Amino acid sequence: MDFAVAFNAVHDALPYMLGGVVWTVGLIVGAMLLGLALGVPLSVLQVYGPKPVRRAVSIYVWLFRGIPILVQMYIFYFGILSWLSTLPGLTGLGLDGPFVAAVLVLGLTSSAYQSQIFRGAIQSLPPGQLKAARALGMTDAQAIRTIILPQALRLSIPAWSNEYSILLKDSALAFTIGVVEIMARMRSIASTTHEPVSMAFVAGIIFFALTWVGVKALNMLENRVRIAGYTRQGAA
Amino acid sequence: MSDAMTAASGSAVPADTILEARNLFKTLGGNRVLDSVSLDIGRGRVKVLIGPSGAGKSTLLQCLNFLMPPDSGHILLEGREVDKKSKKELCAFRQQVGMIFQDFNLFDHLSALENVRVALMKVKGLSKLEATERAVAELARVGLKDKAALYPANLSGGQKQRVAIARALAMDPKVMLLDEPTSALDPELIGEVLAVIRDLAQGGMTMIMATHQISFSASLADEFLFMDKGRVVEHGSPAELLGRGSSSRTQAFCSKISELTGDNEAGECRL
Image (cartoon, rainbow over all chains, first blue to last red; front, side, top):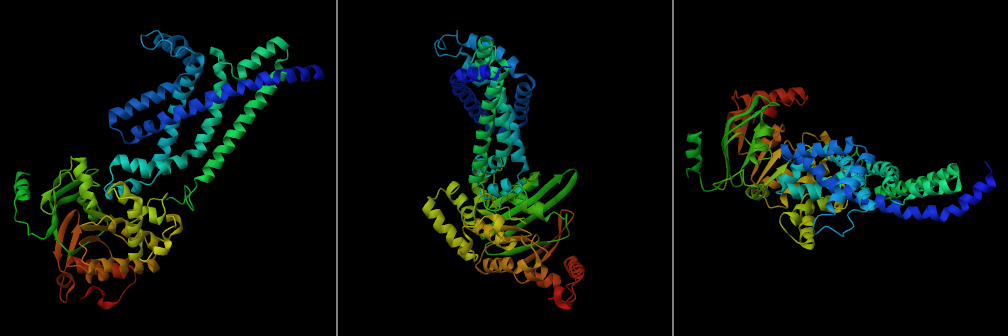
């Protein structure tokens, strides 16, 4: 390998590669938020819902955990979403774009994983917390919102930051349906410059940096919402 | 069952009866933990549940506010039967029946003040300002005004239980259920909680308390109910059950506890 050639290639490619960061961040933020928005209610339903609802949630979780993200990308992008976007009233909304499909697939899959993170946290709380809330006259909805979730979500942050780092790397699969994120740009530049290894290094460093920044940010969040003397052990 | 229904809808209840339970049954895991338990308590009265572990004291208390719904039976608050199928009615009922737990069950993510305040805001709909004022007053009443900002993890067991009492009192309950309020406390912390409970009784609070603190509760209780195997097997005033010459189960049980704890003052189980 000629390092001067490689260095020049990387230097020239860097702005284009970094342009992919916007797409990758868009994918991951969209997917994490969608996963959070669905994962919290799913976890609550799975713990407190009536039996048929619990079963339905469990099937949902199995489906999205059991089907590879790559396969889902094809099903959603070439199948469900392209069909939906031909329905009257849904045309022209951009539902058939690859970015929408990728956010949806990553978000739904993440919601399945996130729901299990939150479920575990909810179930790790002492049962007396819900009892005490009920004994004060709170409805179950009030108790879950003001007593259970604030504690469960705090306990979930470490596992959530793990989910972030996994999802970030899964987002690279979006290149297969044409989202021009970091991986897609790496491949296209690698083929024009014939420097696949150095481009892969660059992509790897960018992904690593994004992981580091995100996990650090979540660590800071964890410390910020920490409650004096309250740890998993201390809560018992 | 139909007998119990007619009995429950009858109006033979004295006017000052606050809480009444009729023929409560509860089976847990194949064991009958409550076997036709009935009781009623008048305003300002203190009843104390005594009996060995597993007798059903805790189950009875949790059935009385439907934290653990009884399999059958009737519960009436001020003569009105509670419809346990109506969630709205259940919440309204529980607001009026305070509960103190053996292991405190303070909300771990909330400060002492917030623990007392949260239901005032969410359930009673008080403004933050009003709720804060009331919460501070209740904490002052249990001697913890200066601990308002502390989280449960930084409070001692006795302080936690006093915050839990303040939290329940803030809802203006008509009756308080206390489930072994001092059983999880280190011996040196029991006194401060008993002092608060004594103040409550002297202030006229209606209470049903399960406890092993027999000599303490004898000085407060209007009636002892001795439970065994899910039934109330003996009841009467402390003087009757612990009096000279009494050969009650309560008396025998009390002697056994004193022996076990090495707390062997001869007069302890004799009034």
